[in-house]
Image (cartoon, rainbow, N blue to C red; front, side, top):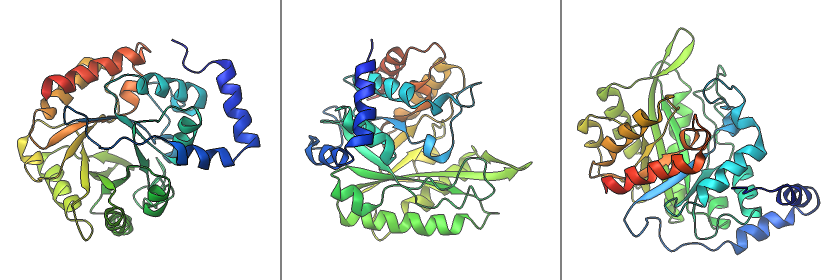
Length: 297
């Protein structure tokens, strides 16, 4: 299925160069759906905010997500699936999808902090360089997502914590979802390594749950886990994150499925695993994930 023909691609490039006002018009005319959750009470989003943080690699290809036309084509395939509720992305990607007329009646979550560039010495000091609460409300989007990597030995955690707390408060003031992704990390041999033990994950959940002046609009985006103690640490709605593809799609699906059965879990937010499956069949990957979500709920 050709979702991004040569003609459609050329028109996108023409508009980008000649009509910058088209972006604001596209925001203004987007048809918003009335609720975040689907009729089944779930939320299934595809994520495409990786490039803005310089995280471009998938599998053995370090530049897989760098080719924008390919990324957009894959996103269009995913968004055309009836089970996909929407997208999570940075302004550039969201605006390209708007100009391609792909976001009507979809949930659109804007990515807020992308300043902690992948591999940088300051990676944990994750400054807000994308959407802010005011712009998300002004543009009629449905919420904002923030990454919160917790590293006890890195002082860069502190300004990120503060910025996330302020963003949660500001989003709530506009009645918008604040999707917080709290991940415990540690430095090991000069690299950041995700801590997957239950104690570290549960602690991250409790820290993120308490951010801001209200948690009324807060969601958590968490890794899949087999330990109910992690998810039992909150009453907030949770979306399971896809994470870095393992190279074994069946194992990834099984892991998500086990977590989706927990009562606080409402859905999936998956990026590279679905957009860049090993066999290249985006539609089949999305369909398999949708079936896992449907079976769990």
